[in-house]
Image 1 (cartoon, rainbow, N blue to C red):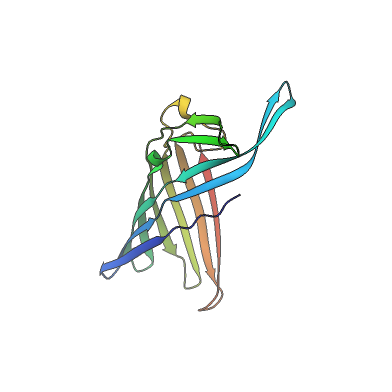
Image 2: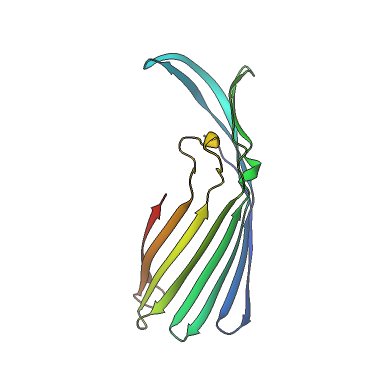
Length: 179
């Protein structure tokens, strides 16, 4: 368990009516995780040592555009960069200061590209669809870690908004990710 503090910043530009451009940044986060490092041999616990592991999470920069192509239709696009190259290794150190495990990662930076559309069916209903492609920061099979991204992904999404009033709406969405 751990807490980490970071920052986010963003700006939205409207160069002309019907065009919105957003640029956002989220700072890197570093977690100092602590817990138990357990080893098993033949399904039997052979060691249980308290320790910590520093986890460096990436800073992220996102650039998006929302462009009206008709009074009731918009196209959307996003490019996102994640600086996973700062995640060089996962090192577990015992409370006594000895290295229990050092797992090299040496990941590359990650990229995400998406395009989508919105269609206002009427004043109450907006429909959405989109697709995305994510390039994994794990560019070599020897760099894979269980439970952490390890392949490129294709994202397909559908969704919509139902406006109950000027102040209240319901959003529905479904995303399927192909690895």
